[in-house]
Image (tube, rainbow, N blue to C red):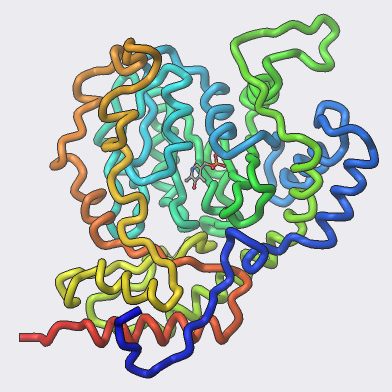
Length: 413
Ligand SMILES: *Cc1c(COP(=O)(O)O)cnc(C)c1O
């Protein structure tokens, strides 16, 4: 607390998505929860809320099929199970993502092959994906990081030309669009998360979407231990888990879904105000969003030129945190492939499976193959953004960043 606050500005408490200050959970959720509990039916195989959630989300998204499941990680696992890779097949993915997007690849016996990201959008590009494709590539997993869509037009053109299915990881991108079309319907399968900190929440939860009936069938089965519910002669058809969402989560999710449009709108408005307020500060760039994209700002990322500030991005972040702006320099700190599970191939017993099946090139994480990734992590400052920010909160964030940045700006020589 020793740092002097030049203007002696009052320190505000910003709404947080980790508690009621920044989450809209109230009467609507409670009414549904009470109904679920009073019904006595808490499993989605017999209840009504999870079914409602699936139908309404499919309608909102414009997808033929939606299934709910227990987490975003489960959603991604379910998507991969539909594609059903052979052991040792490759799934192209990104070096900057949540581990919940990577471990499902390994559990389905496939090799995550990392493509580099664009250091300005933090997303994969068609070029970076193309450079790591191999005859063993079985799927491409595209993450719309921080709610900013990847360039799906070019990516889908590449994928279609090679006949490779695309899974969209929309965990951070509810409501985002490319040329007016929602993410989650641009590729072959879309995956969403309802974890505590996402746009809408049930604490934990996930959703998958698709227009492909074969994938839909396999995903429904995978979530349900591959038991053929409704079939005349049901059986457990293949290896699968119980990834069902329960009715309590479904009850909350149905109410949350009603508010999604409003949350997305607020997030866009707040980001536009931040962009406006933070324009023209040397060494600091506001988010890079292509003209055809509608980003929905799960977080608000600044690109910082550390050499422009005394103490670099870390000092800037430290002083913002002293003002209760809990920003995170470098997001996940290091590329995903530097985590022990992947770097040291800690999987099943001592087998290293499925890494033991990998082409050496597919698991070569040499630094010079990932210039965009290292640049992105060295320059990204992730700021929280919440739909419950008032205009006073937005102004406080803008003023704080301006003040700290200008104070730390190095004299130009
Ligand atoms: C949150 C998240 C996940 C995992 O979702 P969980 O619900 O936490 O399992 C996967 N990918 C991305 C990009 C995420 O942000």
